[in-house]
Amino acid sequence: MRVTHVITRLIVGGAQENTVATVLGLQQRPGVNVDLVSGPTHGPEGSLEALLDDRVPPRIEPQLIRPVQPFWDLLALQHLTARFRQTSPDIVHTHSGKAGVLGRIAAARAQVPVVVHTIHGPSFGPFQGRLSNFIFKSAEIRAARATTHFISVADAMTEQYLAAGIGRPEQYSTIRSGFDLSPYQATSNDPELRARLGISPHAFVVGKIARLFKLKGHEDLFAVAAEIIREAPHTQFLLVGDGPWRERFEKQLALRALRSHFAFTGLIPPAEVPRYVGIMNCLVHLSRREGLPRALPQAMAAGKAVVAYDCDGAREVCLPGKTGFLVKPGAHAELIKAVVSLAKSSDLRHQLGENGRHLVREQFDVHHMVDQIHALYQRLLADQGHAPR
Image (cartoon, rainbow, N blue to C red; front, top):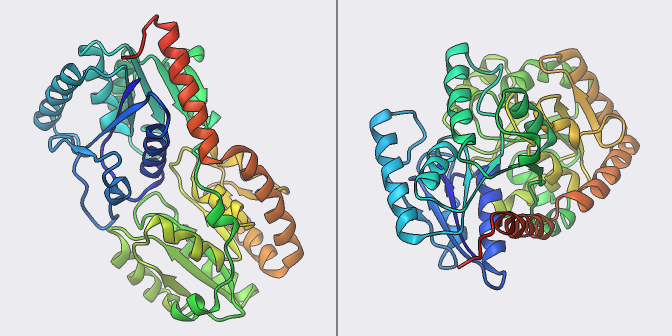
């Protein structure tokens, strides 16, 4: 079975980590040969290319870039089509917006037998304007005609795409974005790491794992931080990740006289993230645009209670009263109440954290994810009457 995965870029992020884990897991299966095609990766978000090393070296497609630029997009489409005609994969599996659209159309032009697309997060929605939504929905509807099957990381993604007229219900399967649970299950509250970050040994640490960029909800956390500190004075905040808006965020905190209460880690390799989760007492995820944020199950695997905005697939793991608190987006009073209640009750944190551990063990193991994807590939090839080369 020859499989080619296509993604726009390999920055440090949930969709990219999912893709790398899938590619490396499939490569270990007998009879499976995997390629990975990516656009160029650069910027403060970092790169995952080193994780692939010699096992599945990424094939870089220079014309495959994130911004919509018709000239370069047409070139990328032509290059991808030529690549698929030359390599003759049995399956093309695409990820992310730009690569998802161009990769699927190219695969159809090259007459690839099976074309799969994973929906890691919505490409349209209330987070952007009417014209942008029209363009992205139209592109997704066009690409759906070239798609054999969709994988959704959350049921919410299937519901949103079907509501937009993209594909048919039988074309969708939900497969959770799995990861290696063991480093998170083995986390501890490292006093040396706390000290290095300027965090008190006795502080209640509210963690957030996200790129420092728009729509990730950092401004909402900044807006409620002073009130949380007033009600729970031992609270400190830990921001894991980097991005183009770091300087902007640091200035905002300085204006609010809150900079000393926030620790910025900068860019952290994925393998190091569990260490930082270990020193958190709870995790907040306030993104306005996400499929099912991996930060939530990662924190839950470490036994941490979570607080999340009720966006997209967050409600599928952040279960109110069981694993955490689900808050209406922008409801600052609810957000404050949830975080303060966790700050004031270690018993509540423990109960929610243990429930979260159990849920994640059942649904998010990386080996289970790869098993499901491999089985899906086999079924789709059989349905097409295609014998893998």
